[in-house]
Length: 195
Ligand SMILES: Cc1cc2nc3c(=O)[nH]c(=O)nc-3n(C[C@H](O)[C@H](O)[C@H](O)COP(=O)(O)O)c2cc1C
Image 1: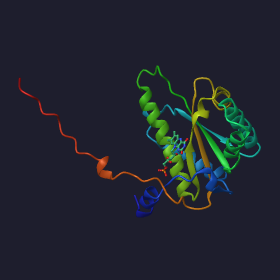
Image 2: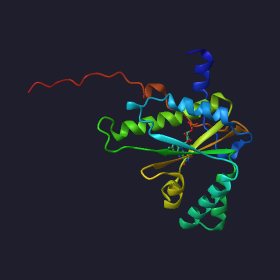
Image 3: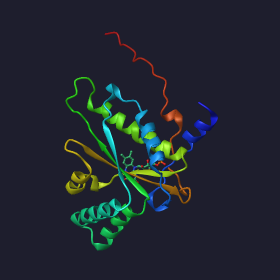
Image 4: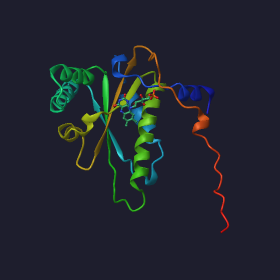
């Protein structure tokens, strides 16, 4: 791994929708992001995820779904307009659906979810390397039945949406990460007690 690659890896941070401006990635760049996603570890090559692009006029349809979901959740018209705006603002949004096979004979669900997470992470990392900003978002609306049905095939779970675009500016307070020592721990076998 070159120092440049490591620098890119260590320098990724999420950029939320309100800081994303045009242009979004083009088809070739989106394909690279998906190729990166497909490099994530994936037991038995199940590819338990799908990325659905929301761009152009599809953004308005998503905005209406978001506004309806906000109203169904008891938000007023101001809240509905705010949620609609979240759909319209990013140049491109990518809905992430997970296809978890709960009865798979070899790969338990948690391993399939790990593959989904790896794919999302690689996708975002490729976006960052290509100079784009992005953020994975979900919220209660992923569980809204009309939204879930609009984005998912039967058997899929809507994980959320990746907002994508050109970063207008670096976030003022990027997420703080723990000290690596908190995560990287020497394993020692448990001592066996004599009875
Ligand atoms: C599946 C998933 C859903 C998420 N949903 C939200 C969300 O709805 N709102 C939010 O602020 N962050 C959400 N996050 C976290 C952000 O995407 C982001 O990772 C977090 O703000 C940390 O920033 P960083 O990526 O710069 O470290 C979600 C992350 C994942 C993996």
